[in-house]
Length: 128
Image 1 (cartoon, rainbow, N blue to C red):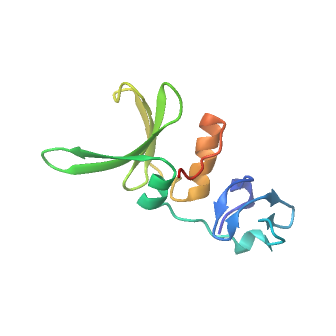
Image 2: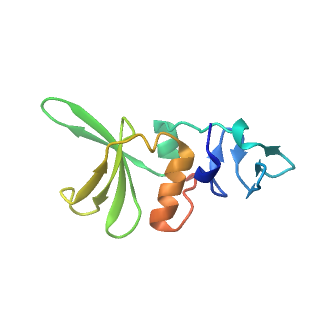
């Protein structure tokens, strides 16, 4: 279940994209409403990340292969998401300048949308 304080207008949920947030629940447009307890997060997948414009990067090492997904958020910074959905912020030009987070905060689409909006000030939308 998604908590009410995690949601913003424009977030994607199991019921659709949120158009309005009310005290009693959320509105999705076309008269469709749900209470907060009806909402489930959409879990992130590779397909979703690619549809949002993330680039898949395969790093080959002697001992393993590492797959990451990255998207540039400004002239200096990009969001990096590991295949286990841990994430970090990295300098666009210098991978040694990075900040990694080892929690599961980005397991769902609405949380990724909120992070992206907080960092870039724009909605994260599907790239066609």
